[in-house]
Length: 248
Length: 220
Length: 46
Image (cartoon, rainbow over all chains, first blue to last red; front, side):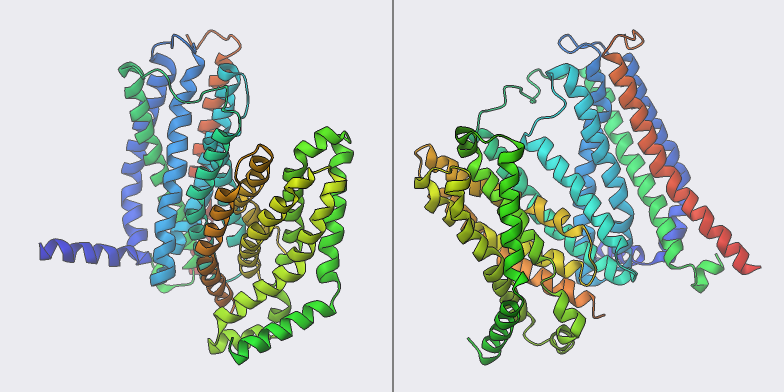
């Protein structure tokens, strides 16, 4: 029990060390790339090309294999950034700051993908490109937060202050996102309820579900992969004058 | 109130009062943006009176945005902020009082002026008190977010302010306008008022400490 | 099937295209940045 706790502690300390992270990520990235490509291609190809045609929506529903994973990933990335923000503010861990800086553009891209794919799916299926319901509005706000984080980071000349500022912004956003979501949700029930229902009224069949799960897993892996690569690039940028990097 | 707090408040108050632009520019901006809506949408009184609460709230939101962002800039530039932050003395008092004085000079005139919306946008006069109360409860929260945006982008003129303040102010906007429209539909708006008050009380310590943390960044 | 290029299936191809574009962008940009920095490091070394 004690040994497990100790190894966890050492792992946590190692996470905070850039050279260790740089070395480990270099080793794991090829395997991660392989698996993520595998899961992603199997999930998407199976889902988009080989899953059965939906009775109600025809073939357009296949966008689900890219829309749902993107939406799921976009929210999860923000949660991890919130954790990193807490670590960065309380323990001033450099790697946490690097994490936030690297993940923000990735989060923004996938939120963007979720929004666009949702719009493109919505137009033929429900007749509209957009609707101001709780989910779409809060996703749009999430996208704006990501962009704000990226632009706040770039406005600072010193990396340490940039990390702290961005952590504060991330935390404030994290506290407010549920409030925004709840208030828009509740505002929608207050005014006319949407004549267009976005909830899945039909339960999804297994032949459609399995590729979706594989695709979601693939997206998470690819986000992990992009995150590692982006963090490596950021570490290189920050530590370019350090001895350990020069002799790598 | 401690002596220091009184002195800070007095100094802030006087410095805002001296520069008339602090309360005049929000007023001008508010009136102009109010005028834009009938010109762009429709000058039919029925249409406007339906839209009036929302339009008023949006114009108030944008007008306060104008002035809240350079809340810390002047003190940062002339170095007086340094004294507070390098000595770690009374930073909370300073932040709270600054936000308060800024609110008095930028939001309060607009709130008073928004009564004219009864004429300009044909807001039903019985709902005026509700509108004013909702503004009184909601604008402090907007000021809090604006102060945070100002603290994060200290000394730089960045477009970050609106990008931070507006999304965060969505709940307050929704609650404020819902208070008025629900009153016009015959319901009791006290729920919305209590929610806005709750949000303010919840966020006040949180955002103030976030502001202090953000300001401290510039002194490391 | 999805190869019937009726109106709506173009939507699916479009989303697929955007997905591939965004994922590859998120993979290529860090790689290019890292390569540039490593090249800089090599020049510094010599």
